Length: 274
Image 1 (tube, rainbow, N blue to C red):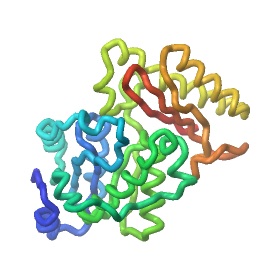
Image 2 (image 1 turned 120 degrees about the vertical axis):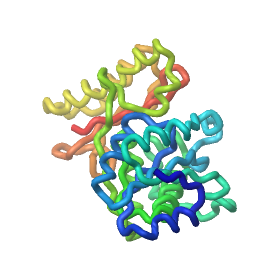
Image 3 (image 1 turned 180 degrees about the vertical axis):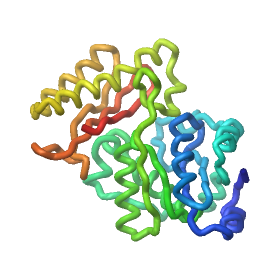
Image 4 (image 1 turned 90 degrees about the horizontal axis):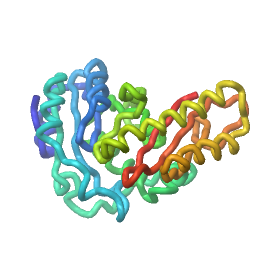
């Protein structure tokens, strides 16, 4: 496995390949990330994992400075599963000058749900993903469905810019108790970790109600929010949306239920397709 820090070295190394399969990450890797890399290995002739904590997608009061940087451990995990290249640029390498050209997703998608509570988040995500896909010469890129709205933004960006990249979304990896794997789970205390399973349980209850035929979406959303609030969480949203565009559901639509809530100081997100 090669560890590369500059775009020029990366391009030199990739010159021998025709179909890079890329897994963009912010590092602090867990089993969910590793599953993405394992899937990517069958989708191209070289597997590239990127490790970059992207300042552009963090708000002014978020955890950019304290976000775990664990490159040595990440590389050991990636080498173990046969990743070929790790691209871990310094901030000055990826942003050698102020990034004044930005990718602005449409407000109807980017300003709802996560975008409502994290203004500018999807502009930062779309901008860095476009830059990483370009730098890695990706022909396939693999993302997890846990960041459901992010995956939709990236799919639409690639489609509208006619980028020659196939975007693959993999199902969320979960712990045995159902908690979605996330780098931010490491912020949870032991007692919070035990309590955190309530988020996925609440989504399952919501999804099961929809599968049973209920269409009183507002009542189901309020019930789910109250369940979390009563348990000491601070929910931002628990909602049912159309899978196609994340807008309000109509009867007969394929749906996804999504949630974001804070447990202690840790903000967690999750979703379930219905």
